[in-house]
Image (cartoon, rainbow, N blue to C red; front, side, top):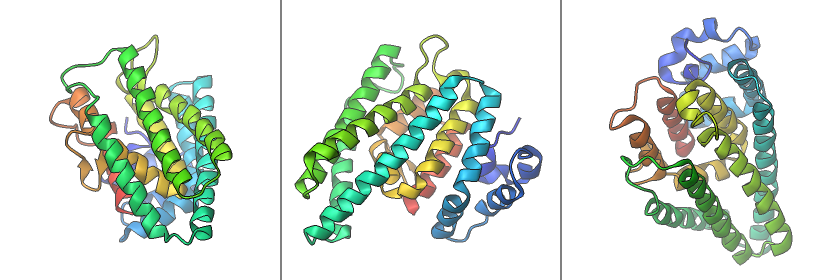
Length: 270
């Protein structure tokens, strides 16, 4: 069956009406329009405007696929990450204004930091033909999130953001971000969610991306760190490694990873 998420990709437009009976008429119209938006800004405006309607439908779909308290916990974690990211964003904006630092300068510096983290992290990942154990995957997730937190803290403190509340917010964000990644990337008893339940995995991923789009500054930097570029996964990055590990050199057209690439490329171009 074509899933809700597949409909967000170009290949899925023709199946729109038959697969989204659980969503409202406005959501139908919005999803239809996603495929024909002329500009990136128009696409983003549509997502932000009706994002809550879509995410509600996505989480209902996820519960249909896999009824579990884990879905509720996942949604709560995404809500927490989004609200905390908004708070951190506001703190950085206020610091920039107080110290007379142009926002473009700060964005450029943050981008340089994220590029540096990307180069560091890709050296720590094994070759794509070596599937890591569950323990190694957990260690890789923890290392990545620790490095992201450390880089952002250094960036924000250097620009005058108060250290104590900053650390409190960043710790909360990292805790819930780890919960999100662990839910999708690892399952103790059933194997990786992306392998065992690919429809569920991409449903949760796109729901998370949709909820984070209003905080595009954060989403874009996270995608950059994980190696998603405006033209797809960057060679040597985490995304390219994951692609080759799961699928080899060719990603199945219309599959969950292809759809994730499509959404990531959209976000990186905004």
